Image (tube, rainbow, N blue to C red; front, top):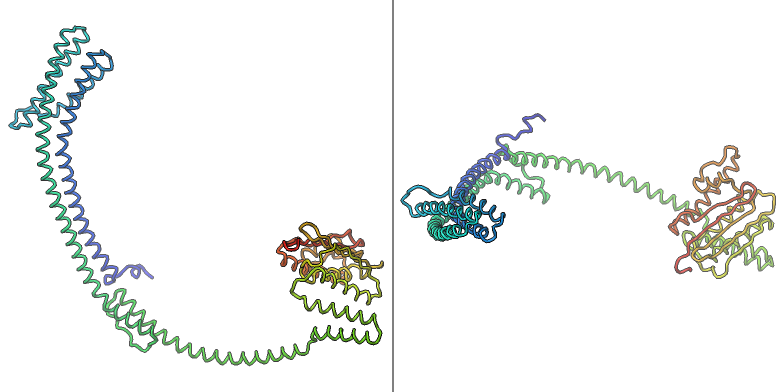
Length: 505
């Protein structure tokens, strides 16, 4: 896009509106400047009206200060009173400089000249009074003070008269200024109304040319929204933004028609593909059903074991019956407790059944001992926690041990924890093996290990990690299971510390 395309054209709505706004704002700015200048002028005249009264009041106040300081000095003869007198005298003379001193045919000007003349005489008398006081001439400073006090009274009466006359004249001028301000206010309101009407008129002229194509575009859009795509394309009348939008609408309408045709074709193809997928899925489900039907039903297994146990009892094969019954109970617990929690008593019973089955298989080679606190059978824990650990001790701890295998289960209840320990006297684990089991059961422990040993310990790690993961999910805590060993040949201990809930304390 080049620079000419970025700049708005002369026919664009932006250019038209910008030009109109520029001239309207320029006109309003000129009016505002005119009104502002007139208001400032009126305010200046109002300030001038009352400035004369302010000057006269200052003159009267300063005259009173001069008289007071003279009186104070005569009574106290303090240096501060004398200093104040000279300062106030100087200020009073400066104020007198603003009064009229010429002969003018005006009562106010004549009063100003008389006040100036009497003030000069007054200041001479006050100066003589102060000098006589400083010279300790009592008779003379009393005489001078009486004359200055008499002049002070005359001057005050003249100043009061002058202030009254000035106030009456300023009041008349103030009324004239107020009427001028009212006229200016009305003129400003009239001008603003005219500007408002002109702005509305110009806006109507501009909007009228934009409304017609926009109304046609709105009607066409409504038809398209209702689903009628067979309307004729709109004519492009102007080259401004409305024309651009109209042209874009026409292109969009043509594109929608083309996309609908393409969508119909695509939907037909997708429908045919969907039919094929459904057919393949039906065949797959049929194959899965046949596969499931070919699997052994776990419930059929332990029900058959129970039937075998009853048959053994009927034939006086008591040990065989007990073995089959323990096998049935073991499988029933595993199937029933998958994904559930259970009581500690049921979990211990499952371990007992498992050890019994193993001793039948291995002719009692496993010595199993329990040390369990009383009254803890109803505590609920995750299912299948103890039996995998005992199985792990048998398979990977004492299976290849030359000595008689020993497994000990210890469960102790503390104030807020349940401490479980499964220990064996098997081949034991090295620190590297323990670290690999706890952190990453897929890692090998030592390059010197045989493949058989490596596979055994990897499966050990996987079983223990499964127990660890389920404990962490159940209790929402980590570090519940720990493994300790005296090293290779010194057995292994697995310690579990479970938190007791409120209902189990």
